[in-house]
Length: 310
Image: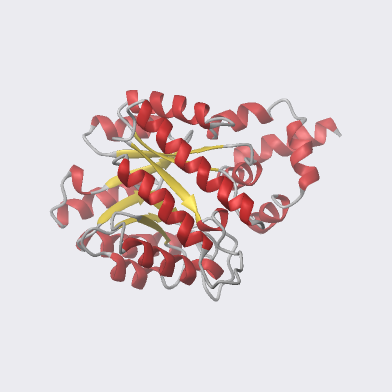
């Protein structure tokens, strides 16, 4: 119920304007988002790198409706990669992209795939600068198209990463299929409001599915990227890595910027590879709403401020 309400709220422009008028909003944005532009993203990435962390930078914005918007997003990613290279960060910083931001929903008269073409351009820039790209997963209606595009682009760029969401019923099988040599897979729980026909809705059962999916990745030949803040799942991931003879360099943990920074530091100090998912850009509202859904204390603070203002 809470997730459904928040997803609906993320689509209301007037709520974004209301949020901007609240004194606490900027502090919340700064807690989770690097800033508005590439310079902000690179500066924050530099600070994370100095703390021993790796980074995956996401340019906020999705569901583009015009080819010019998709081209703009692609150019921004290429510029971001160049900026990372200039500052010597491509050894530890990669980029995350959503195919809906690259034109996945745009129809063409020529039969070409704008999102695939734009993804290839970003992968080529990343490969030239010796870093990587990971494709974020969106709602289940785009899953098959996203995996098909990733499979096609991987023929030329085999280190292209992809995200799978443990709350989907099919994800254990997808993990098994994708756990092959050279395959980089980020496993997260899932953040979209999905129907029970395709997704697990009970939180405990989602955790169990996460463990089953993670087991497939850990015992496979690919490179697992364990995206969770859950202490129990982190412990299980470490146990599975030992069981399947994976050293600290054979998998990595991933966490969101601004979430459990002390745990990020603890894992780094223990010798683990930890990558921070770092968003930037002006289209922060939907992302902020999802973070509030994950942390009820933030949601309560937001609603309290809104009511007091009214």
